[in-house]
Length: 290
Image (cartoon, rainbow, N blue to C red):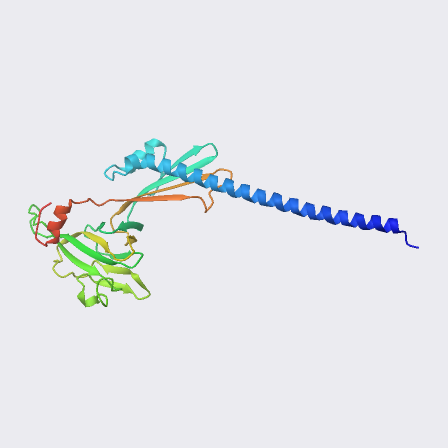
């Protein structure tokens, strides 16, 4: 005959084991959640600390070197290193390492321009391909500035400016501007209406072969909700330097430099900024001295 007491004890033991198993799973789950939340909290705190330190170190350098008339060689006396044309300054605070690099470059990447803001591309008689791209639906107003040539180097015939508008997507014109309407010779990427190439070696109406192109000024024209665009410019190696680029990143020495580390980038245009009144005179296409 079956022992009822033993059976009950066995059943109770099984129930206890099951309850303990459930409790252990719950405890493990709680620990996992707490650990994950703690890691996320620490990660967010580390990210914020890294960002703030990068910003602080970059602002320290910007205080002096945002003035593009100040050469970068002074960075060497501050313990920074030089590789090619790239200056790198490294700082260490406890376990946090910060690298800030500074260079003058002819490549402009995602430079933000707002409404009625102008970016001047330095040409200095550049004759290569100029590639310009942007974000958002905008038109581009372009003003090409050039110096009138003269046989006598001691005689200055002044500067002139011609204008063009690229509006391929019809922001301000009903069907967009056709290539026949342009002064500048655009090459358009049919798969990307927000990218154009200009061959600066091609003849430009009104600009003599001996004239010297000095700048191409671009201004975004926009309507609707768009308030800014990101402009990128590149050419070949003969294109003059366009911006002074500062790039800062901070990371913890114990984990190395992860791709998720916050990176700060600032670009300072190298072109001289003309007073608006002089820019207006240049737009009138009359010859002026400056």
